[in-house]
Image 1 (tube, one colour):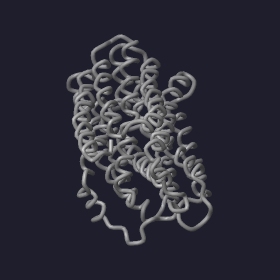
Image 2 (tube, one colour):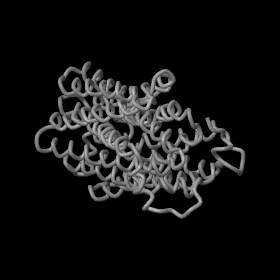
Image 3 (cartoon, rainbow, N blue to C red):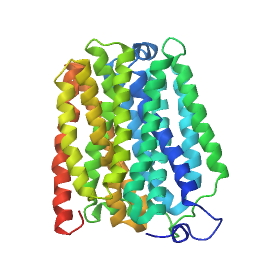
Length: 399
């Protein structure tokens, strides 16, 4: 494992724990970014407030992920060329501004612009925090990226739980303003803390970003994340709406969604331990198979118990896929972590844009239950791709 001095170079003394805590704060805010829209749209008054239908709700998820996509494409290389500090400060400030915008929005147009801004800030935080932890922890990046993902789960689960607890006591705008304050505190803290210097000295080049696609195995990993990101967006964005449309209350719907985020968080705690005993590609394949079972259970029942069980199983299976796949990439391409991660996030977030948007279109034309077939098909794709990675890794003795 590389030492911290080798990782961060000259400058102020930096401790891995301090850097990890700062990354955890950023990924927690990113968890809030991804969970907030799915949560508030589980409350019927949000669509009434913005005067939108299910198709337009899907369009808002598309715009959110468009912002994350754009940020990932640009911020990844900027981490290598500029460093983490400026990127973390700006990204947190953008999230705070977008939350305030959502609190004031009363139309689809206004909400759409806020969604893009929210995605830009969230995408920056996601890329910066994952690249920072991957660089600092070297050979231990697999377990540590999964531990980092736990705090993503904390951020994601706190939103539906908070929404369920404040229903009837506080308004949706007040929920957005609370999230805005949290992001602003992070921006202020990042401005005061020291971070590692940039790793690359040459000028930023978009050609190099595109050239990452030619690295061996990168596209295979990217398309696993394409489907995984899309499935996470579908489950996080549409579960509460789905549960609400089959007859359960908004409070129950948000609690079912909370079970998904809670299970996702728990699975990353477990994965950090499991990865010390089995290979990364082996873990991804096993939990991909679990995700298919969870999707089938969610679609096949109206029982509240099975809705909770299916959603929780999906969370347990999805949790480790993203960080563990990133760890595989970090092992292979440690010299350009930010650039490679940015490329992977960009491809992943195309899935994050397209799959929930597709779910919205199918839901509007047929039913929300029919729309939820989309993540089931995505689970099948993840199984096929992860099996390919496992076979290749085994042939190289890396499983």
